[in-house]
Image (cartoon, rainbow, N blue to C red):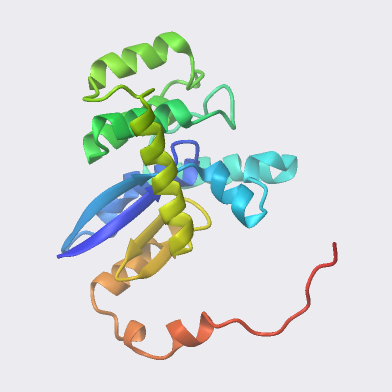
Length: 210
């Protein structure tokens, strides 16, 4: 059985769709998932990127695209009233509960099946917290530290976006990487060939000026 590290942030619509699609995409594979809540904004800062919702044309495309994808998957989806929003309360709540599939599902549904409500609306957060009954205080320092450590470990592994799946020292980024992840788990001979390593090597090229 393979262990898959699923790096996620509840702010990401692609992470939500990947979470919903994962059981179907990997049907017949032998695997166990470790859910790794991380702060997507910290990845963006580290790698010098802007998030898709920070560029208006890309924001518009992202939500049109993800809603189309959701319709193709048959996955209910409603964009929250405010986006991007601060995901820290949800990430910390996940860790305080222990991020198994039931907990992660409840948090994703809170954001993306909430009828378009604000994900950080205090009454909604209070109801969600009461329902999940976390074993630890989400505001405790040890929970905050665990989230920082998760994010730092993801960066050290080379994670640059969410969703991202780590298995056997390899990273598979994005919803559209699920078929590739399945191929790896099913022993596709392509992964034993030279292309993975060869195409991951740096090479000379034009650099954008500052």
